[in-house]
Length: 319
Image 1: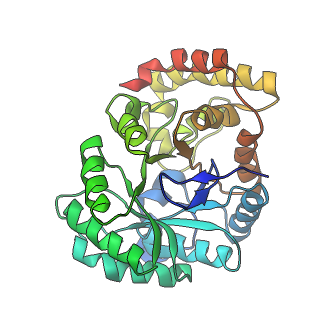
Image 2: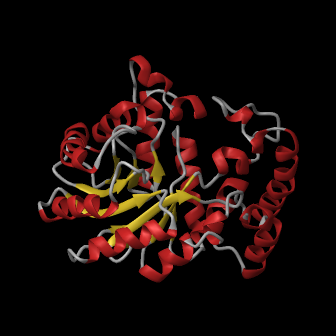
Image 3: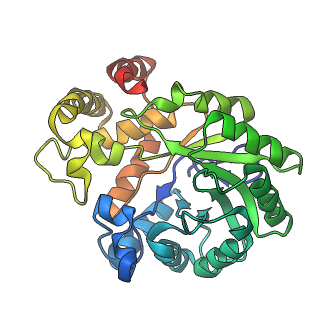
C-alpha cells in the first residue's frame, strides 16, 4: 500500500509519485506534430497506454498529469477514457493554446472536463506564465472554479519564485491554497535549487511537481548502451557529443548504487527526487514495463552517503 500525503496544503491526498501522459492519445491532423509527439516520438498504441495505466494503478501510482495543449486535447480524452470508473486522480492544465487570456479559462475548463468525462478536476494548473495572462486575475478565476466544485486544487507550472509568490498571495485572498508548481527537475537539471523556486515552494508549503525527472530518458542509461532515442531527442545536448559524455559517469554511478539495492538506474534517479523534501516526480510511461519499473522507485531508500554521492556527481547541473 502506497502512503499518500497532502498536495501542498490542500486536502487532496496524492501518492509520492505520479505519471506524465504527454504522449498519450491519438491526435489527428496537425496535432500529430505537436512538441510532445516530435520530442518523444509519440506513444506505443492504445493497448500499451491501457497497460501502463493499469500497471500504475496496481502499484498505487494513481496521479496522472495531462494538459489541454497536449496533442490538442487528445491526451486528456485518452486519459479520461482510461480513468473512467476508477479512483485515478487527474491533473490537467490551462490554456489549450499559447494565445489564451485569463478570460478564456471558464470555457477551457469546461472543455477539459468534457474531454476527461468528469465533473471535477483534482488539480488544475496554469501551464506557463505569459504576458497575456494576468496572474492575479487568473487565480481569481481558478478560485471561482474551486468554489463551484469544478476544481479541487489549484496549481501552476513553469513559474518563477516571484510569479509563485504572486499566485500564492492572490489565491490566499480567496482562502484557497496554491497546491503545486510543476517545473523541470532532475539530476541533470537542478536549477530549481538555485533559482529560488524550490526554496519558495518549501517556504509556502507548495509541492514541487518534477517533470522530465529522467532528463528525457538520458538518466535511464539505455541510450548510452546503443539505443537510439525517438523523436527530436538525438539533437538535445544530453544525447550527443560532450553532453552525452558528461552524462556517462552519472549513469554509471546510478547503476552502481542500483546494484546495491537490486534496482536500475531509472529507479535510483527517481528515488533521489522522491527523497527531496516536498518534491513529487511524474515520469512518463509508454507501456506497462516502464510504469511498473517507475513504481519500483517507491520500494527502497537511498542512504545519506548515496544521496551525497549523487549530489556531488551532478553539481554541475545546478546552474
